[in-house]
Image 1 (tube, rainbow, N blue to C red):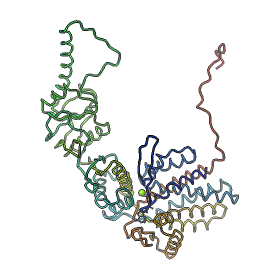
Image 2 (cartoon, rainbow, N blue to C red; image 1 turned 60 degrees about the vertical axis):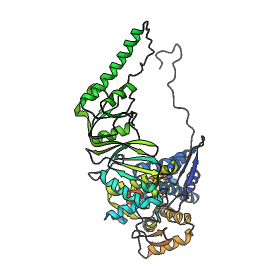
Image 3 (spheres, rainbow, N blue to C red; image 1 turned 30 degrees about the vertical axis):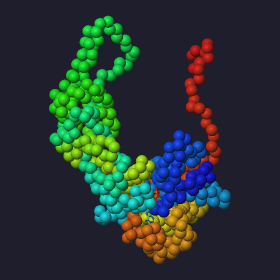
Image 4 (cartoon, rainbow, N blue to C red; image 1 turned 135 degrees about the vertical axis):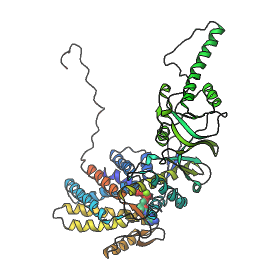
Length: 508
Ligand code: ADP
Ligand code: MG
């Protein structure tokens, strides 16, 4: 188990930090992903070993809770297990090790809190976003992007909380990353269903439908016997009438825009266009929900319920050409918190990787806005933590002090790897860092912009406190869990209820 976890940590450690390398993932059908993002690598990897799978789970938890720091979390877990192995070799029992690790993790949280600083300016937020994107696909546009991201996150803050789902990310192929932009409103990747419709609707009243504007095919197999042309004609007229009455329903509600999750058929398109209504179809459910929130409209599943009350409002709905596609921009929404980040980039692989970097940065920004606490990056906080945990180990009486010590040593894995990935000598860097921290420079870390050891906090290499606390707590939890396993037993298929033998009624 320990070996499996270590191998995994070794695999991803080369991606850590601004000088980390990328991985190219190739699946069995030949699709490729080029990424530097820990959680993406791990979740795309074909992993069989059960203990390694547990490590992948940490990355996913980290991604969900914070959105960044996934590589760090998995590396720490791997290192904690590697160090535990040394203790096991010295005949220290796993229960002692797990006890020590738990003590250390609790202490680490307290220390981290005491090391954290309150965020004081918007400039710091920008720095945090930049730190998150340094060395990723978004690197060369990070100045521009970080400003956009800060603006985006700030505009969706609600009572000190940030729901990142409120920020819609729409990817557009073409132009460069620098031309990414923030739109106050919702952009959906759909064009109007008919060329006859207006391209622009001012003061739009928007019907949000999750029912189709077409006649559904009957669910059961149905056969109609038609014996004369008149019958066929009346059947078709009947169908058309049904659709016309659907459109009539929309028109009489006063809607000037229809956003439909399902289909809109040709006849409906024709009549909607005749009424000057702008309509889009097959819109994603999530977009419909965002629109409901943004325009203060209600999603309607049954056309009969559609009245003016349910309509959403936006001051402008417009079709805009983006590259080869047309998109629908819905701006000037009732709720100004609705925003879309348009991410542009040359190729799909590039945009996807930029999006991952952006999501990391957004996660960091959200954590900081919620907690207001930041720490120094570039390994600074890890070294200080390591130093203080070693001091803490000295105060313990029992054998668990060895475990706390190993926990402390595991923290050094972050700065040494940052150095190694940048082609610097890890031992030299570690020694210098330790000297600085011994003399009280608690924010000194490795600045990889210039390869120097200095106060990384002052240099703007800052990260949210939550990234570090979450990484340490999930890494130690999983290490403890794996250490407590003494055997892996293949369990059978999930049990089925035993079938009664004939003549055994009542003996269940
Ligand atoms: P993770 O998935 O853990 O977030 P990253 O590849 O994003 O991994 O690397 C994060 C690490 O890189 C953090 O420890 C952070 O402090 C460090 N880092 C970021 N920018 C710099 C920099 N300019 N100099 C040194 N370290 C940096
Ligand atoms: Mg990161």
